[in-house]
Image (cartoon, rainbow over all chains, first blue to last red; front, top):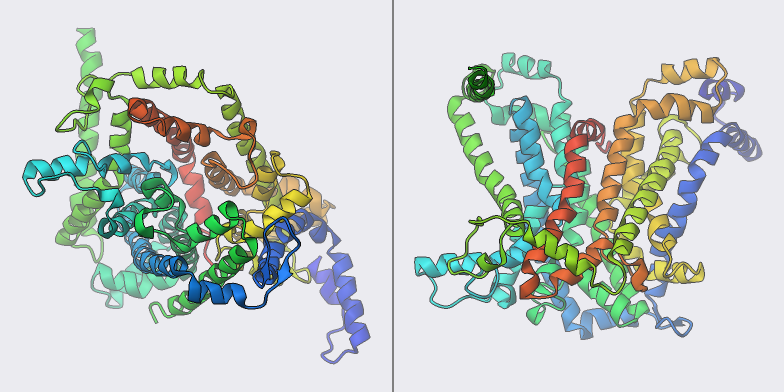
Length: 316
Length: 309
């Protein structure tokens, strides 16, 4: 199919616009089957992903309460977010604290575990992959609420009480200074998901010959091997995993609700996602919610693009 | 006589096997290039430590589900039940029959949504991935770059507008509102496309020479080749839909899902602690079993998952 198209078109650089257009049209006709096959996805993807992102940006400049038609209000939603809405600023702070810690940490954990697990022999490899991956699909927050339960039956409390470190049970899940650290510990527990599997598979793809050749060329230990050979060779996997972990780090919300309730005490674990859900689903201020969504979108995509630039430097 | 042979034999092989594995870990590895014994020991210590962090909470969850009620509120708490019982699971069953909507309805909803959503997703994603991977049609690059960009944000961002879309389509409070958006999840298109790129072009070429249409090629040449990938897509989407506890578009009790019903049980307070743990274990068991069965295929798919610039 490709070759037919290439032959049909004269290989000239300067073509008239009409000719170029005709060629294009010819190509598109030639590839009719491709368009037919991709059309269900394109249709749904445009309707449920592209359109919402674009419309959100427009809606963010309006006042919209579901009942009335949106009314244009300019930058007022954004002004309100950054000047009047203290809870939002707190949510931004929490989200960044959370993302800056869990994002890179979970990424490094995925990488380290994938690497180490990959060194194991056959069966054990599969078992350890499962052990690390299982929490992310278990959805089992329940145990953490028992571990950090505020009464003396909670595992953490009873343990510390018996050691004599504390004399009264601690309210772990509603004391502001403990909430964020607990949030992060649980999030890390849940974070070895698809990205971990991608890295695990990435290590697998590298041919053993490279390591032998590298040993001859003077690579002395496993760290050098990791940095100079393995990581550059699996750069595409590093990139893919980074995207997943960053997106995950910024979309924290549900875990916090399960652990600390909504809203959390003193908004100590209130994230941008929570704020968005609050205004969109509970308060029905959809224009305002759209502004939050737009900001979140920009932050997520922006961070991803920035980090990709960093990853390209690995091993260089 | 015979009996002793029968009972002893497996023990011996198991211990031999274990010893073999240990020897493999500690001696064979060190013979490999650039591997020291001390380094290995350090790595295994690290692996063990974090293995516990990873596995212990799940282990305790399972223990919790088998704890009899009188062991729940003891001081000091008993991590492992002294008299394990299936009472919690029975209690869960009896609680289920007291709910307003028959419990079987919640089970049906989750199973129905999960199966329809997963099947549709695998089909739509594969159909889109094939031309993206193998045809150089005008617009292919652009569409793929949109897919990659969509991996970079969470779908919650689209919720505000999607609510308007759903109500315009009159899909609020129908299964469609949950099932159809699952079809277009970009992760599946991405993974499938990356996997299909590896299929040698010569295979497609020979199909064309034999006169197969593109649809025919897709269905009888490509799809059988990418079994690991569609299994992976199915399992990832299954995980998403299975844990779906609520949605902005579902308000009717008859359409609510299993995780939602379970969370209502857990919210029932102290007396239901056991039943809650039992519910959690049942819910987490299903995706975990599927993962164990499909691990090899998933890793095979992930091997091609990288993003090239």
